[in-house]
Length: 338
Length: 153
Image 1 (tube, rainbow over the protein chains, first blue to last red):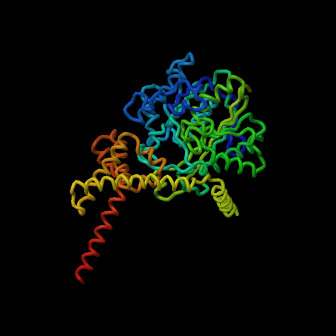
Image 2: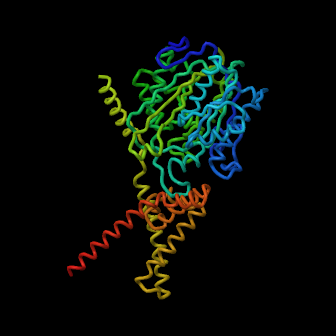
Image 3: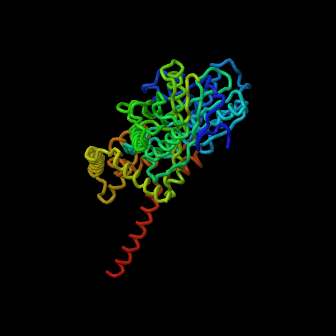
């Protein structure tokens, strides 16, 4: 068994890597939301000067990486790896985004869990001594996700109240062996959990069991409870999934009602922005963490958080073939000082 | 043992989802569909009366009405209005022929970026395709039945 492993699914880093820089780029609708002041860039137009939604998404991710590097006094040559992913087939947005960077690239698909998936792997690479500077980045775009997973934009259909709104946004974080925090102290890698939800318009419910499973596993492995965290925040469960997660975790004896939230709830104003159950997509936890949460930790408003990005691992093909939706959730514990 | 426990958890969870899921506002949605769908039909009737007034024969007037309504649906889709009508009206704007037009024009616009052959050409009927396939197939079947019945008259 690895010396840094604790419990069944958790790693406790010996030399916790620091998140030394982040950048968040948000779409116009996200820029009208409650977190507008925390984003580095808010797009005026969701095509971002490109011809297609996919290219716009890719450009957002490229810009997020560039901005995250710009805040540091280091060059792209110093970056050892980039772990990146998005929602598009064959990781189009990430692959095109890193094309112009001369950085070794690992492409990841974890659906909307990709942010913490990439942060987990980046931290392992750093703590393992394989790298000093690693970038974790992800993106999603409402329009590119709609056309791949649902209907063309101009099609006049109605969304059920359980549906969520894919966030247009990209976030990048630089994780390093050097630096003074905030530190990534633990990662709990989730298992695929599928409780038989087939409704692609209710992904919050499909992902909730995975989120709860990872949270409970993290508590068990580390001996911590919800009381050890200032904030426990899931990636994109929305209102529906969040309530379900709270209920499942509560049944196991942990009442998180006072310090639990969800990035999909934070990013939009649910009463004003017509997003039904809340935000979703890789970009959801990416811009909420890289924009809002990181600054909250840096300013000392939050000392220790558990970030759990959640993914619905469905494909348009699996849905059509009648498969239920497998959920995944990866947790990353982040602390201001250790 | 483990297995049955998991099945029970799944069952429990699915019940929980059913209980927690917010439901659509049935009355409001039906009313919106009724009013908007009805309004589209009124426009159709208006167009029909207009052409009848011009002296178009009654058996041909349907073609004229369909042409105008399909154009209106396509036009409003192109202006980016029809999706907003659809968001409000649901089936009220999907069921009339304007909705059929919307379901063809929307993918045509969306996939133009992949080119005119593999984009527009290949993806145009991605939503309306099933309607055409089964609509045309069932009309053929009905035609054959009609023919056979006529043989025995």
